[in-house]
Length: 243
Image (tube, rainbow, N blue to C red):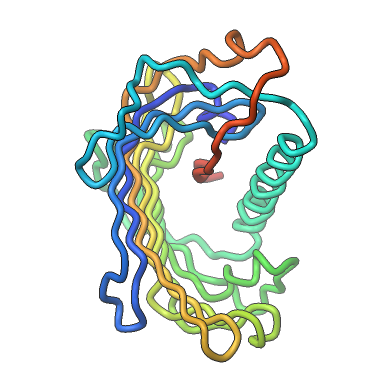
């Protein structure tokens, strides 16, 4: 996320909440401008479900009061990034990498690897437990030393927290694509589908697709100098790099 946080960008988001039979329960499509401050994303939501919101790209950003409520937001997003960092750090320990060939991704030559869980891998946290149940393919630009694409699939149902609180269902998928923008490698596409059961009865499912474009330098480090009002907040994922 540190790379993404240096930029302001436009994104198109498709957010679908799913029923247990995988039909769409609720659908929202958004066009928005995103920028970060203190590691927390701020939004100008321009269009929701095809209707203009009245916000404009040229409108000023929400002002910020760096009070305790704001500091809680900052800590929460810091913790999310730390959890993701822990998962990425475990990938070389959790997976075997098998060469599958070479393909081009968006015109970039790529080496393709198959990632399969290593027998006997012991998860170090609740987050890394899922690595034991996932397979993936990674497209790597060896010359640049960056990953172009990652596609991962949950191969079997698995329990988290003893299965009493959360069961993740087989078939969940995640895809991430990145490429260089003005010399900086940034994630421009992410898509995930997943479903879980919480406790005995509650089902949650989501399909989320995010397409980012028009990356520009983040202006907020210059703009926010005083103690002002708190903004509305959401978060996106960090990018991933093949080591």
